[in-house]
Length: 258
Image 1 (cartoon, rainbow, N blue to C red):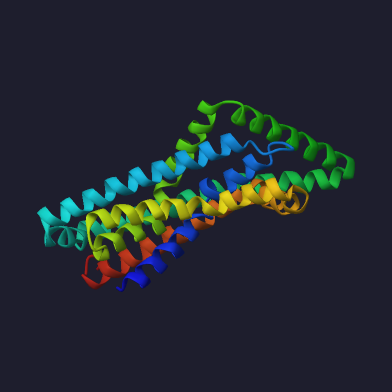
Image 2: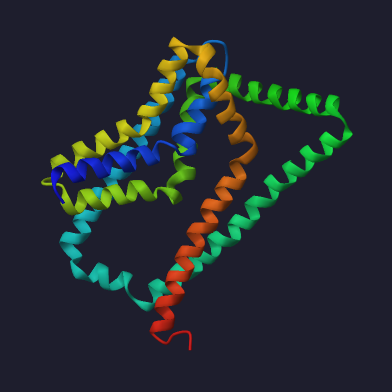
């Protein structure tokens, strides 16, 4: 892979990563915490998220290099073994089941919303007002303390570890194509900066033109509140199906499934 192709691919993966809950939805949520966005708190949040991603990626990058140097082709053989594919099928099935566990909660919210609509417009407005009040309360508690902001950032990264597929793909590219370890570390840091760049752009836009940008931010915020569980369920379900189907296919070819 040429250096230009490597940089372009890494930038694309970083932009995909920038649309996750931790790098987009939570920053939007924080941006809407008041008439003026909590600039310091948001910058702290993004700095912690980027730093955690970088440290995690650095650990994987160094670990991957050490393992490849010491184990060689044995790692590839282990990953291609029948027990590994059985484990893949089990993990895929588990993710699929988890997606159905997540979805009913969101479905219940939609059913409650429909019941509120049938009761009448006033009841619906009351429910929306109460929900908005609860969200403002959470925002105030989170943005009121640096420790709380750091805790939210750590929790967001921890929850997304299982779905860091673009990031793991980027680390794989760096392991295979970076000219040196120093270059790989530098590119990894650049990846993390690009990953939080859209949130920084949104912050700048809200500071410069709040009246114009707020409606769009509130639509994103509303979508996240109404559809977050369903989106997570779909992502987990699709990933589970892909893993399970691939694993079953390989096991069937090897005659393990009869």
